[in-house]
Length: 141
Image (cartoon, rainbow, N blue to C red):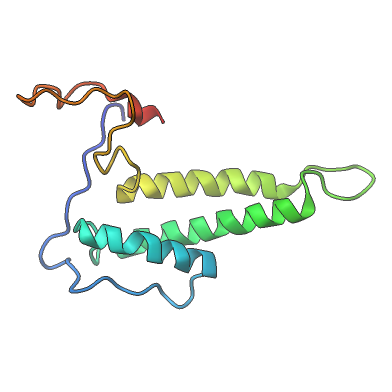
């Protein structure tokens, strides 16, 4: 599907949470840290509801896996030990996890362009609001 995606919508009143939830116990330490970093912002922006908790859990899990794979790659090196010197599989796993993190972050509205933050050099919309449908080059970043 081409074009701009719709901005994340606040959860309905029945799906809204009374308070920002703590991270699930089963998350890894990296995933819990990411939950503690993102959940309060999502809650404050009224984007965290019962219907989005699973997406946040999956995002945090993928983020925790990404960090773990980076550690493994840093510890083992790009090439694994052995006569053949095969590439470390952690490099492939990093790419897959990074793709998942990016997709779920977009789903949750975590990117700067989703929060309405404009990058340096990006023109501001005119006072009359006529620039709402204009091309936003920060979407490519």
